[in-house]
Length: 175
Image (cartoon, rainbow, N blue to C red; front, side, top):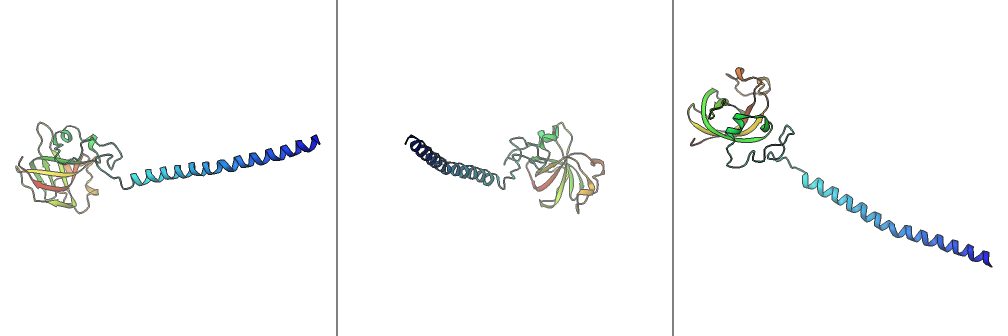
């Protein structure tokens, strides 16, 4: 008789272990679903996040204020363009010299002028020397004339290899 009880208790114990394992299956499934939901949330949240105010096209961090509406970044860009490589910026200043219909220099206070090259699809007005303009665009690391496409590159040879502003919009300004 004692032997029968032992066998019966082992058998019953085995069933209880099976029930416990099945009972935790729903917990693992729920945990898996939560992980998938969190991953989907992160992917959706970051999808299409190509905000130029965060990380520039070059992959580097842009200054927090880069490209902000109404922010004039002329002094910062003229003093050190490197933090702005690949970032959208807005500069304001008088045109120091017109190089071609698509390229000009914007004068800066106490610094080197900023080379501006209007992209092929740029909006804006024709510029004149001495007149102030607001210019929006992306700071590019090096001017490569061969990479400019159908842009009129007359006068740009002396600026080859230097940082420049690839302008998408130009408008007359009070400065």
